[in-house]
Image 1 (cartoon, rainbow, N blue to C red):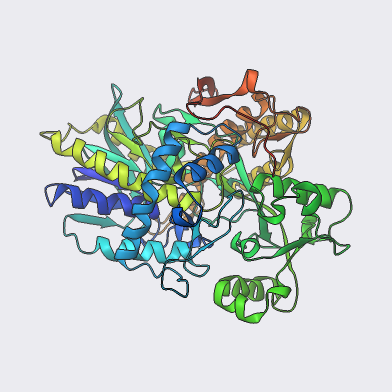
Image 2 (tube, rainbow, N blue to C red):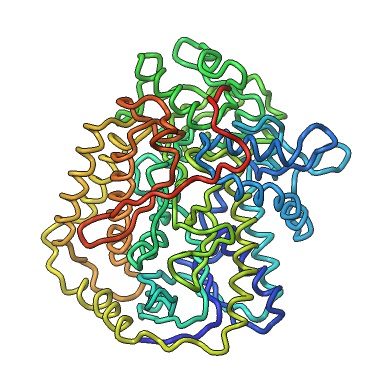
Length: 572
């Protein structure tokens, strides 16, 4: 086992992780030894897949305001967002956009040269700052290029974390597998920032990259940190058939129409004011109702769909504003959106829940750990995230956690003593026991079954019967997983080992998600119960907190911050 020492570790190299690294390096002025660790190559996080824009109030002189951005966010969240956190978020965003501009992010511009913005779902003002339809890609590379300026950051590519080392509610380090060298590493550090992203690869039909398996959430959960609001999963209205590749909300923000098999623009009857630019939970439910009513198109493998029609936008606008969407539609669906509508349906897209943190991104249950981005739940998204607020959240809390964790680490006089006993146990488990286990079950089949049951029963619509069946199946799959081993015994780039560890994480998170959904007897945002179709503020205006136990999650609840606006009916 190798032992590596750093003052501050950032786990994850997406928007939140890179923003945290730049901030920590800047704040510490060379004083801290910082490490950034990524399961992939540093420039290949899922953040590069963000397409449409980053939400921000830049035009108060034209009618927008910080208060309006905050109100749209709170209303969009179905009033489960913490309103004090939302205020922090909207106030910080303009600075982050201009900072990205200074770093070289090639924002799309208006004719007068000012940064452009486009409409996005649930926003009452064109608020999404964009770089064509490759926003996340350009933001990541602007931050990555900036990070190269600092010589006190050590990078670890292709290194997968397996556990957090915690004792007496104090962070002491983490354990990892170096995939490229096939070795086991224990990292000792004064502080940690989790920035590992979401978990939507738990689902089968999803917009997410294959690497997004909730690793950071799972290792935090097993280390005693509670997961908050995991039952709230966002289904993006426009996942490409049959791959699930994201078709950005910007396609609707730029004027695209949703049509059923009768050619009708059906959003008129579900959200007469905002139509296609209503919040994602409303649009996804509307699409599924159209499909269930027989007004969809027959798709492969049960993936019936409706159409996203861009043909009326014209070639010039599509090529200028949506070049990536045209490219992926042609490559993955053999459809040129200039001439034909795009086949789409709702796809698992975002985890509103995550590791429970306070407004500084700090984990209240363990000292020395912060979390930022999709792995964390502050909560500013509540039960439903507005489009363009995710990349924005990554920038804001990447900056906040980088600042706070760096200042904390600088105050610690020395590194903590390594928890060698726990580290050696984890090394034996990962690098020896898993390799020796008899492989009487196929965990790839278990993975396929898990995704099928979540797609079927923990999707856009949910019921008591379906959730109970899903939870029972997950428990059964967990028992079957105990009889899984790996066939590949090589240590170098062992994708069998990676898939095994990911499967372990996904099974635990699926149980938390499903149990939370089963217990929450109401419909709110992305959690739509057919047997409890109404929002129930009297009993369920509260956050879910799931704590790890060997027999399954223990559920507790915490209040929502309602400091500005009282809940009202959502109308769009």
